[in-house]
Image (tube, rainbow, N blue to C red; front, side):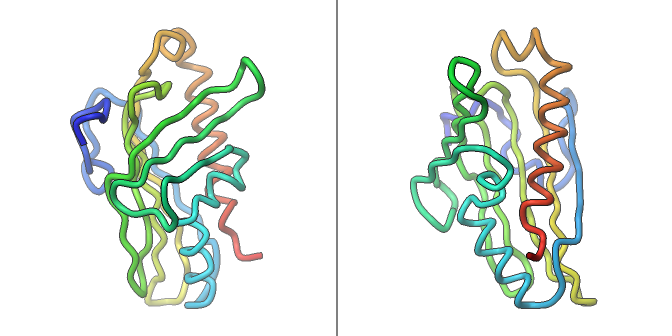
Length: 164
């Protein structure tokens, strides 16, 4: 994983590193094992990103450690190529998720983790954790805009897996 543009691989699983912008968000997206299975299938196929409005290409589906993810946001010359590498993926009866880290060419540097949990009470909870900092000259210059875009996309990701 030497291609990654940051050193703190896996830090979205616990204490996130200083010197980055941190995001933590949570939403109940369903109830019961059927909703969990549906949401887990969608999550590991890249549907949270797709339904949030990103074009996404995966080197394999379902995602697993080592999967290459290339997203694109925007239109025409205002679109951004967003290459990532899955650094963690897991699926059990009550937990499903993945984390991807930034690769060279990504507008940011850092990691984002998407986790679904089927709680003992039956709720299907979708958690997102991320740490990031500007990775390119234009994201350093436009950092406030970048934070707004990240917040907007996080809300869209969370709604993307709601029970339909």
